[in-house]
Amino acid sequence: MARPGRLSAGILAWRRREGQPQFLLAHPGGPFWKNRDEGAWSIPKGLIDEGEDKLAAARREFTEETGLAVSGAFRELQPLKQKSGKMVHAWLAEADLDLAGFCSNTFRLAWPPRSGRTIEVPECDRAEYFAAEAALRKILPGQRGFIEEALRLLEV
Image (cartoon, rainbow, N blue to C red; front, side):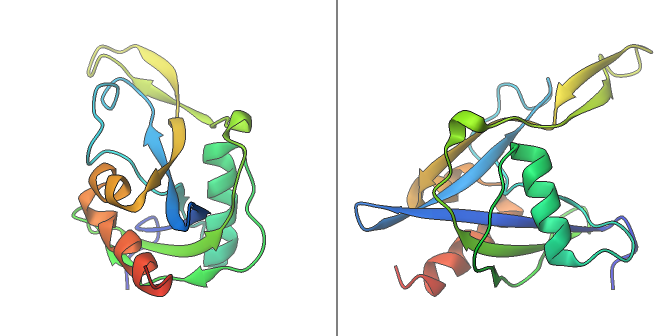
């Protein structure tokens, strides 16, 4: 079992357009990620607080990172271990969200590194729905399995 602080939870929201699924991914904020695109996006996710229910954490983190809420049926996906060793738990949920309401929480970041200065940046700077093929290119390699499993579950 992963150590506390090494567990994350998130939601892979999806909607159907022209009979095909589209997946909601979020782009990380801050200068490090500014010019990165393919292989940089993520499901909205974050750390699970000690003693917190994993799905409750996923819903909380989704809202913190997007300013949006998902309700309805949640289907648990197989957890994925990231290169960092962190284990990510995720749920698939159908949600056709209005992204005009997107608004992410922020955090303080030392920038430039070792400068002694800090800047405040959004945890995610944008969110977007992608067709399956594009989503598989955009998502972090360690999270591709969530989309692949979702496609099997959705029988696409």
